[in-house]
Length: 115
Image (cartoon, rainbow, N blue to C red):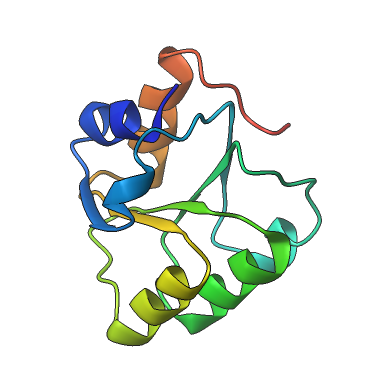
Protein backbone atom coordinates (compact mmCIF):
# COMPACT_ATOMS: atom_id res chain seq x y z
CA UNK A 1 0.00 0.00 0.00
CA UNK A 2 1.26 3.49 -0.76
CA UNK A 3 1.87 6.08 1.96
CA UNK A 4 -0.72 8.36 0.35
CA UNK A 5 -3.37 5.64 0.67
CA UNK A 6 -2.53 5.23 4.35
CA UNK A 7 -2.90 8.98 4.92
CA UNK A 8 -6.39 8.79 3.45
CA UNK A 9 -7.42 5.71 5.48
CA UNK A 10 -6.39 7.18 8.83
CA UNK A 11 -7.62 10.70 8.09
CA UNK A 12 -4.04 11.83 8.48
CA UNK A 13 -2.20 15.03 7.70
CA UNK A 14 1.21 14.95 6.03
CA UNK A 15 3.49 17.29 7.96
CA UNK A 16 6.69 16.49 6.11
CA UNK A 17 7.59 14.42 3.07
CA UNK A 18 4.73 15.03 0.61
CA UNK A 19 7.13 14.07 -2.17
CA UNK A 20 7.34 10.52 -0.79
CA UNK A 21 3.63 9.63 -0.81
CA UNK A 22 4.22 7.02 -3.53
CA UNK A 23 6.42 4.90 -1.26
CA UNK A 24 5.20 1.36 -0.77
CA UNK A 25 4.52 0.15 2.78
CA UNK A 26 4.21 -3.56 3.51
CA UNK A 27 4.50 -3.76 7.33
CA UNK A 28 3.43 -1.74 10.36
CA UNK A 29 5.00 -1.54 13.80
CA UNK A 30 3.17 0.27 16.61
CA UNK A 31 5.07 1.28 19.73
CA UNK A 32 5.75 4.11 22.13
CA UNK A 33 8.81 2.26 23.44
CA UNK A 34 11.80 3.22 21.33
CA UNK A 35 13.81 0.38 22.88
CA UNK A 36 11.34 -2.01 21.20
CA UNK A 37 11.72 -0.18 17.88
CA UNK A 38 15.47 -0.71 18.02
CA UNK A 39 14.99 -4.50 18.18
CA UNK A 40 13.04 -4.96 14.92
CA UNK A 41 14.31 -5.59 11.41
CA UNK A 42 13.59 -2.46 9.40
CA UNK A 43 13.54 -1.45 5.77
CA UNK A 44 12.04 1.30 3.62
CA UNK A 45 8.68 -0.50 3.47
CA UNK A 46 8.09 -0.31 7.24
CA UNK A 47 5.86 2.30 8.86
CA UNK A 48 6.06 3.16 12.56
CA UNK A 49 2.98 4.20 14.52
CA UNK A 50 3.83 6.03 17.73
CA UNK A 51 2.52 8.55 20.21
CA UNK A 52 6.02 9.56 21.26
CA UNK A 53 6.49 12.88 19.49
CA UNK A 54 9.96 14.06 20.44
CA UNK A 55 13.55 14.07 19.26
CA UNK A 56 14.20 10.66 20.86
CA UNK A 57 11.67 9.00 18.57
CA UNK A 58 13.13 10.78 15.54
CA UNK A 59 16.70 9.78 16.43
CA UNK A 60 15.54 6.19 16.93
CA UNK A 61 14.00 6.23 13.45
CA UNK A 62 17.17 7.73 12.06
CA UNK A 63 19.31 4.98 13.64
CA UNK A 64 16.90 2.28 12.46
CA UNK A 65 16.47 3.64 8.92
CA UNK A 66 12.73 4.06 9.41
CA UNK A 67 11.53 6.57 6.84
CA UNK A 68 7.74 6.52 7.46
CA UNK A 69 6.22 7.62 10.77
CA UNK A 70 2.64 8.21 11.91
CA UNK A 71 2.13 10.16 15.13
CA UNK A 72 -1.16 9.10 16.72
CA UNK A 73 -3.42 10.72 19.32
CA UNK A 74 -3.00 14.16 17.76
CA UNK A 75 0.62 14.51 18.85
CA UNK A 76 2.29 17.60 17.43
CA UNK A 77 5.60 17.67 15.59
CA UNK A 78 8.25 20.22 16.55
CA UNK A 79 10.55 22.16 14.25
CA UNK A 80 13.52 20.09 15.46
CA UNK A 81 11.69 16.92 14.49
CA UNK A 82 10.99 18.39 11.05
CA UNK A 83 14.68 19.12 10.55
CA UNK A 84 15.60 15.52 11.36
CA UNK A 85 12.90 14.29 8.96
CA UNK A 86 14.12 16.53 6.14
CA UNK A 87 17.71 15.44 6.64
CA UNK A 88 16.67 11.77 6.45
CA UNK A 89 13.98 11.89 3.72
CA UNK A 90 11.24 10.84 6.15
CA UNK A 91 7.50 11.11 5.86
CA UNK A 92 5.83 12.44 9.03
CA UNK A 93 2.07 12.06 9.36
CA UNK A 94 -0.27 13.12 12.17
CA UNK A 95 -3.63 11.57 12.96
CA UNK A 96 -6.13 12.30 15.70
CA UNK A 97 -6.95 8.58 15.92
CA UNK A 98 -5.64 6.43 18.78
CA UNK A 99 -2.89 3.94 18.14
CA UNK A 100 -5.39 1.11 18.57
CA UNK A 101 -7.78 2.55 16.00
CA UNK A 102 -5.01 3.46 13.54
CA UNK A 103 -3.43 0.01 13.74
CA UNK A 104 -6.84 -1.64 13.40
CA UNK A 105 -7.71 0.34 10.28
CA UNK A 106 -4.41 -0.54 8.65
CA UNK A 107 -4.67 -4.20 9.66
CA UNK A 108 -8.21 -4.43 8.26
CA UNK A 109 -6.82 -3.02 5.00
CA UNK A 110 -4.34 -5.88 4.80
CA UNK A 111 -1.21 -4.19 6.10
CA UNK A 112 0.36 -6.81 8.35
CA UNK A 113 2.22 -6.12 11.59
CA UNK A 114 5.92 -6.85 12.06
CA UNK A 115 5.06 -9.63 14.56
